[in-house]
Amino acid sequence: MAGASVLLLTILCATSAYSVPFRPRIVGGEDTTIEEYPHQVSVIYIDSHYCGGSILNPTHILTAAHCTDQVPAEDLMVRAGSSMIDEGGQVRQVLVYFQHTDFDSDTYDYDISVLRLSQSLEFGSGVNSIQLPEKGADVGADICGTATGWGRLSENGPLPMQLQKVDLPTLDQQMCILVYGNKITDRMFCAGYVAGLKDTCQGDSGGPLIDGTLLLGITSWGDGCGAANSPGVYTKVSYFKDYIDAIIN
Image 1 (tube, rainbow, N blue to C red):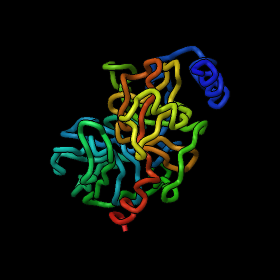
Image 2: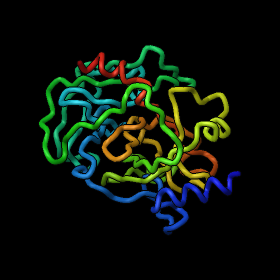
Image 3: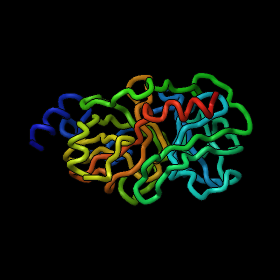
């Protein structure tokens, strides 16, 4: 069963770890630019990159609840419009955040938070919003999604200076449950390879997993970075469409 799954995922994402030499990036990704992914932001905690996020509109950013949990809003900022981790772009102070009240720091269930900025972002070639999925839309298997961020290049390794991207296929929900058991809820889905090598890592948390112009997931948790039989787990954005709309509207 596992062998068949590996073959299928290799076909779906042409840039898979099985068809190119392994290079330790996002993990296993490559350099990209903010102009290609203008919705991506860096969430800064006390002057350092802390998490990723996605632009919802000029004053709101979507990220993970574990990125805001027990963190004072005044200690958070957002950098938009720069491909580099710690320079350039537009930096805005977080005014307040709306962390989901059901977030569980032990299980990472309901891992979603919306940041409200003190000053609007100026939209342009490297700063723009991401499209949200329809309420309740399923994240099926075999979608070749793209994750981006400035997370570590290997488990406990260094952070990159330039924005990284990696293509990751979504997995069937039953396969996700097979790997992680009852840790997986209806608010989560998995993406990655059975053999590992390509994955998101520490510092990518809160960032986007997209399908074209559509935001499928928020980078949430996983067992290691790029380890075999340990795909990344993502918050299912479609589950929270009403929650997001109620805040930003």
